[in-house]
Amino acid sequence: MTATSPIRPQATAMSPQDRALREVAEKLEANFLAEMLKSAGLGKTSEHFGGGAGEDQFSSFMLQEQAMQMVKAGGIGLSESIFHALKEKQNDE
Image (cartoon, rainbow, N blue to C red):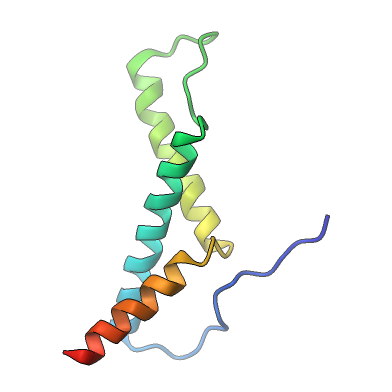
């Protein structure tokens, strides 16, 4: 299996506003991916352990962190599209 490189373009000097927009875009992509993982059944409480409500709560944190790591590794390109849309909107104002 061959590793792929992230979709995100090479890091260049960004303004503080661009960094903030990118951070928001990445968080939005991570939230989207976390919901997709949740819908796929990842992080469901196993009936064998019976951890109850606490286990359910902490599994959502795990899903969120897994999704954020996916974004940091390149994600699905959603944050890049969101970033450019936000930047365009900001430039129109």
